[in-house]
Amino acid sequence: MTELAPSHPQEKRPVGGELIIPVASLLFTGYYVSTIVNSPWTAQVSALFVGSFLALLSLIFVVKAAIMVRRGEADLSVRDVFNATDRETGRYWLLLLTVAYILVVEWGGFTITTFAFLTAAMLVLDKGRRPAYIALLAAAFSMGGYALFIFAFDVRFPVGPFERLMKWLLT
Picture (spheres, rainbow, N blue to C red):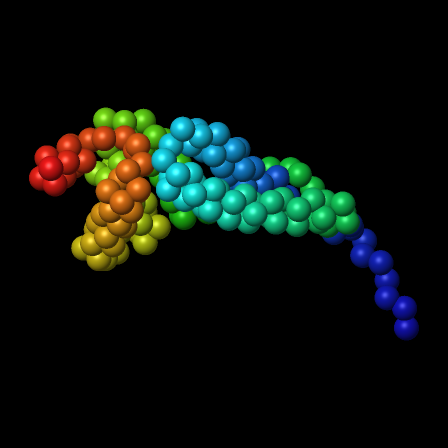
């Protein structure tokens, strides 16, 4: 018994939207690595390690998508980038929070702004559940970032009220 061909061609998977973040991360990695040339060697090593890892993962994703497009399994359309589930998953809120973080980090400094961003983003992703746990987790991540990058590696992140207070307390 032979199988009949389907009466309609199989729809190709749209991977263009899935490539936005990997391509943006490659661009960001290139920019970030280019800005650390005059930084202390510890910052350079850290940036190259993290940047290389991010670039490798992004390139793997891009190559995988290119192979799918070449095989005819996918196309580069972005038709599924924004859909009805975006409101449910909080994607719009995450985009707004990211833009707000970028605009506010110079004024609020790295630690406070990162704490506020992480808290808000995790609350969006967890749909408002467990706010105390989320705030504690965001505080741990923010303080860890401060301890590693600002205190230990002396990286020039935006300085805000928290960083000024810590500098005053520690000197």
